[in-house]
Image (cartoon, rainbow, N blue to C red):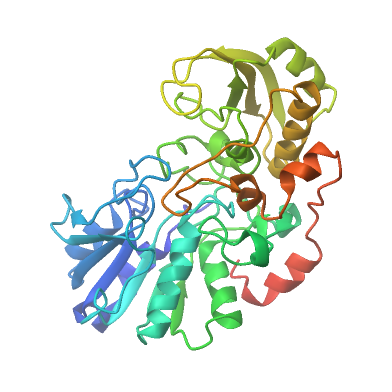
Length: 384
């Protein structure tokens, strides 16, 4: 099997006369060539006229805390100015884009609707369309798999639940690359955008990292493949008073709270026979985040086969089990971020539907099926 070549690798080889035009790049330290050279450094070394950088949540170093504002600064690697798109602004302004003749976007994603890099892309798309500037998306694989049959809902309810962790209606686990979603959004929402997507070569939809290509840590809590695979489900715990593993070395693969009896929870959980994972009881003390310094008891998940894993269904089942066992303890959680300073309604924003907490309390079903709708919708925009 030939090694994957990313969009950035093809751009570096095929640029031709476009090297001389003033370029801006939306990126972070997760974006590198197949040889491991930071994309922005590689562009400069190849003689591209890169004059400005934009960074998403977590900053250009991908080290910023979840939800924390990032400041404008100068990039230590290149000496270029960095405009943060996760602080006082979420999109490039017309002044930011003055003199820029093309914008490049190169940021790895994890395939989950409430991961913010996708929505930074949409803000950049809107800014480029408004200012009539071409946008080039340098595509990358979806590390959690791109088989559309594995997509999981719900679809986002834009009327009630749109936010910076979900602006437009797509499934929670979308099973697309950012390049494919960019093509879809351009066709359906921004037809005036001059968009080019440079694809990944030697990539197939059934590939899952790290079995088929290297996993790239994308943020402080997204350091390992298991975290990314489980994130569309265990990330929902941010909406309730359960620690989701932040403040530990195992974010999104452990969860717990001081009021949980881990053996009782494990016994109830094992009755569900969730495919693709191995689960054990655990206790841990988060160093930061919810219950920092307190001993939490709960579960540790290990992905043993990502192909049959349905992480959103896992997350809903986990919330339902916790509420059944601990109805007097489990509550919704405020989750303040730059995009939602008050932190209210976070569970609805994560799942993408209104009244999630009441639905869970009433033990009503939450429908996760999105096919064949999603496969039919995305078919014209698929690259791989």
